[in-house]
Length: 387
Image (cartoon, rainbow, N blue to C red):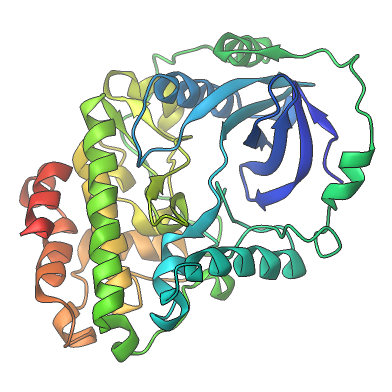
């Protein structure tokens, strides 16, 4: 059962849940606005680095304003649990959006119906990733139908919340929380090298998280290719903007890219973003953060990162959406990292002989192992795809 109140926010229902925390649909009681509320899961036992990442997410995004970047509004700590309030994006993940048939989008309300259908389907199977997802699942979010939702909206609408709840807000409350568990803000002993573990911590080949299987005809249908190219161009614009503000996203993947009913692409979930000069404060003790399948080789090795790490992740996304499978796959992170570092991906021309030539060329250049061999900026990628 989700909490009824989180700081100044009244919880309506669960949108998504993952290893880092849970995202709720909520109402800001101060102004009545709907928001997506991300609550970190570990509470008082939370690794303080996660709290500082959340504070950084708020600080780095609060002043940003771009049509392709999600807007954040507030952050704080509620009963020992850090939270982040952000723009509620009603839409589909990029993968789900591109899996829709052209017929489904043929009418003016086609995408809107698909979004509502995705939410209803997710409500039946449980509150997994939807708007503002927390993991790499790419199903829809919860339904508007109160009877179908595991946490009915109507029950909360009828209940009068207590006004006696005290809360702290703002990024300094997150830092105070981290300090309270005796974690220094920086660590002088940070190692720049990441040691690959002998025992992989978790499998990455989860069938429930694979994209819908599409035939080559569906992958290459001109209408889908047009949607794919348009989405990638918008995603490039988002990256140009954040990179221009000194940010590297570091967790770019299809479930962190949402498409709303107006077909506007939105880059989400900056919990792993960082200012380039502050790497040590975010990845203390050489801890690796990100999603394994989309990590650049230099990120796996724990080397200093720049915008080209996001460029690589963009290439993995493009390759996957062209081929119907990722360039590298394995059952454990260790095996996956070995492939990323040591082998070349299968040629897209072999996997999808009819793939759009322009997109195929871009995908292969984007995922080159040496950063110097890739496109150097998201702006270069945009120009290559816009030709």
